[in-house]
Length: 466
Image (cartoon, rainbow, N blue to C red; front, side):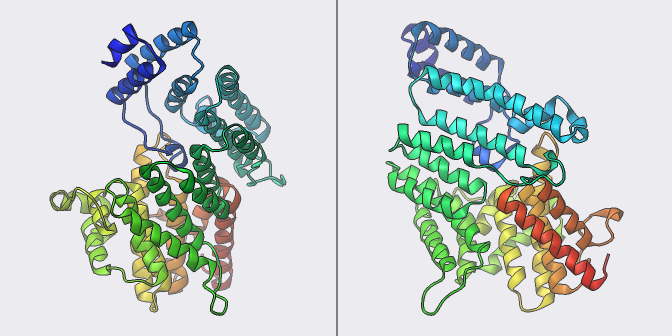
């Protein structure tokens, strides 16, 4: 039908249907906001889709359409195949990239940046304003500024090491507000951007605005799920205290997050997102959590802290226990046991419990479970990544689990982390992981990694442990 339409009654809508249908038939789909969740996600283009895009561009040139959304989609689809800006920059040099000096790195980053920016500016000048174009400009600028701020790309002693320059991105925000003041999609992207750079307060405010503006229930529910996760993260990393009879800001955030996920459980499209968050939020608020069921799930998926062999052994049971819709975290883990996002939520809950256990033995046990879960995320991410590397957040959480166990036990190596002979203790391994994260991150996330690096060193100095 779509092919018939573009041949006989071609319109932008017909071409969009035709190209997106070709894309869906020939490549795997990309989840919403994938750029913020996994910077290394790449999707190859099939030959049929390349031919379709070429034919559309020829038609668009003759028809002189003023709708630039599909023209942007074609470029974005090409860039999905190439990878994010960092992928493109590194492709030319491969392993030699690490040996390039800061000045040469900056030149290469800027050259590749302007190649794509010029395309986007050309689309901006040729077509009517569209929120997707502003989103593309802002996301491209976000990648650029992050690369320029990474400590590994700057000389030692540089004042702006690890500091993300938000001004160019904020300028795009302002222009978008002037031209599209009432478009909720732009406000939603703004919320995701602030979440990406760990500016949680601004992210929360933007999410609230986007939820008020979004016209459809499905859109509001998706934004509520994202808001709940930001509120939980903000609460965990905020040292707010209760004052008198006033609830602390931290508790207010958690209660708002709990209300969000409670609303989402009744909708099929968002019940999984609610399942990943509800137990974690409940734990922070001191509400009941079904630990028996969570522990049973752990023993099924991570028997003896061995993810691979446990999955192989229990695969028939896991397949049998799968439900159509996941409404609880334990159920989601059994159903999506190869999804690092699901496993990360599972490990995060065990990590938080480890820090609150009254006895050191139980604290170490839960920290070990958290580490095993995050290590499974590492295995999955390395298998999917072109660079065979884990996400910085996974590395950070693995180090957090080790450090928590060390602090609660007083032992520099309370359990085996598989680090080999290169590191003298778990603690020195955790410190190396934090240092690696610090070198590859910016702003508040980098500060958190740097602070934990110092904490590891303090413990090593105080205890004289390796």
